[in-house]
Image (cartoon, rainbow, N blue to C red; front, side, top):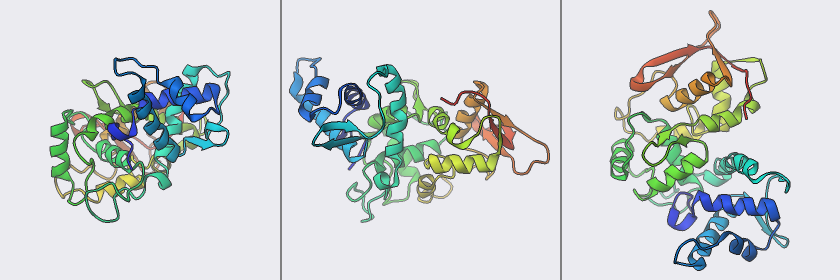
Length: 306
């Protein structure tokens, strides 16, 4: 099973339509829901649209976002019909992200057969492999073309392991990466940037105004987002890299992607990155060209994390 295969798993825009409809009108009969969300916008009519919506609904029911029972299709998290749809849409990526990263959905991240197949891998393993691998790259020089990504993966990953089943998965991966808070930009300005995913976890890790040691903060963040630095899925992908192909950072330096997220959150006043003298372990932010931006020993929540 997969998430980023657009031909079989649908698009995030279809997921948004389904989830918004269920939040507003659910629980709702499956066929009524599909018909509601399948207003034809092209000459192809409604049937192909309903087919794609059905695949999207099936996959995200398997992942645990929707429930399908005698009362109809519902959501597995609290909703309020009076909540404005735009506010619901703002909450939706975090809910989806939590399901994608659940161990029961994304593990094992490779098929037990040790062959290039998705059979036997976790339902969301394709996205988890892709985002863990992408976030460890030089995000400022990462190519955008599918052929270049395929060549980079082949150069870095020890066979028979792989990141993407084939190059056709890259466009779908980029769309889901943006929706799930791990990337920004459009097709021409795409950038691996986990700022929104990190922002959503801050209130679970930091108490207002209370400084947390840098090491402790990153370790806690990695438990909640196991595809970033020190995360368990990130380490699994790192373990299959060919030696000396990807430039390794010193142990006290964070990846460019996590560094960008923390720097952005610091600049917008959400967190403070403090560098206290004689305060123990310090970590460094890595910028473009592997330049060290700043060092910090503590992180403090100073603004609204939402």
